[in-house]
Amino acid sequence: MLVADSIHKTYRKHRVAVPVLTGLSLSVHPGEFLSLVGASGSGKSTFLHLLGCLDVPDTGSVTLDGRRIDALTGRDRDALRNRTFGYVFQFYHLLPELSALDNVLMPAYVSSSVLGWFRNRKEWRLRGEELLDRVGLLARRRHKPREMSGGEMQRAAVARALLMKPRFLLADEPTGNLDAETGDSIVQLLKSLNRDDKVTVVMVTHNQEIARGTDRVVRMVGGKVADDRAAPFHPRLLTAVG
Ligand code: ADP
Ligand code: MG
Image (tube, rainbow, N blue to C red; front, side, top):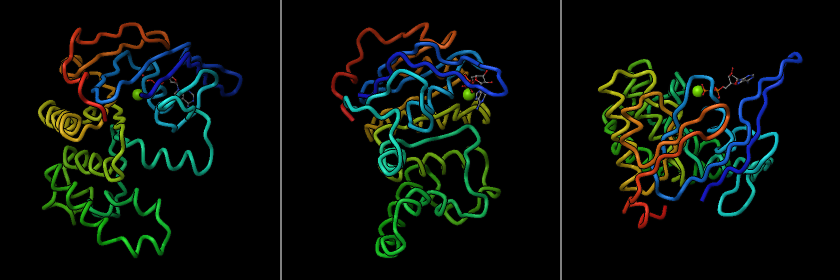
C-alpha cells in the first residue's frame, strides 16, 4: 500500500511562493487502476513526482508498506525509483540516439555495474524483446524514436517502465500528445498490464472519458483531493494484490 498523508508542497523562486499541495492525503490500493484528474496547474504532476520519489514534500509523508519513502537519499532512493516505480511521461522521454530496444534496456544499464551488465546482457536483451513483443513493437526494436509514431514511442516508453518489474506504474498524461484512437490503445495496454501483470497504475489524465473507464477517479482541487469516486463494489480490488 502506497500512502500519501497530509502532503504540503510549495515552490519558491525569487521570493515568489507558489503553494501547490495543501494537505493532500491519498491511499493507493494494491492492484487498482487509479486516475488523477484536475485542472491544469492543480498539482497533478507535482503529486505524482512525490508519490514516485522523484521529488520530496515540504511536510507530510509518503509511506510504502508502512515505511517512509519521502525523504530517502542515495542508494535506497535510487533502488526504489529504479525497481519499485515505472514512469511514463506525456512526451515519452526516449533517448533519440538509441534504438527502441536499447531505450527499453536503459533502466538495467544504469543500475548495473559494467561487469554485471556484460554478464547479464543476454538475459536483459531477451526480457527487453519480450516486453517489446508485449506492447506490439518487437518488429521495431532496431528503430530509433524519430522512425516511430507517437503511439509507438509511448509503447516503447511503457516497455521501458516495465523492465525492472515495478509494482507501480506512474503515468503522467500518457495520452496527452496522442490522437484519441492511439491514446485509447495506450490506455487499453495499461489496463491489460494492470489486469494481467498485477501492476498498480496511477494515471494523470485530462480526459474524463478515459478516467471513467478506470477503477477509481480522484479529482484534485486547490491542492487537495476534492472528490474520490470509487466503484462501490469492485470485485477485482478484493482479489488483486500486486
Ligand atoms: P498539473 O500537472 O496539474 O498541471 P503541476 O504539478 O505541473 O500541475 O504544477 C502545479 C503548479 O506548480 C503550477 O502553478 C506550476 O506553475 C507550478 N510549478 C510546477 N513545477 C514548478 C517548479 N519547478 N518551480 C516553480 N513552480 C512550479
Ligand atoms: Mg502536469
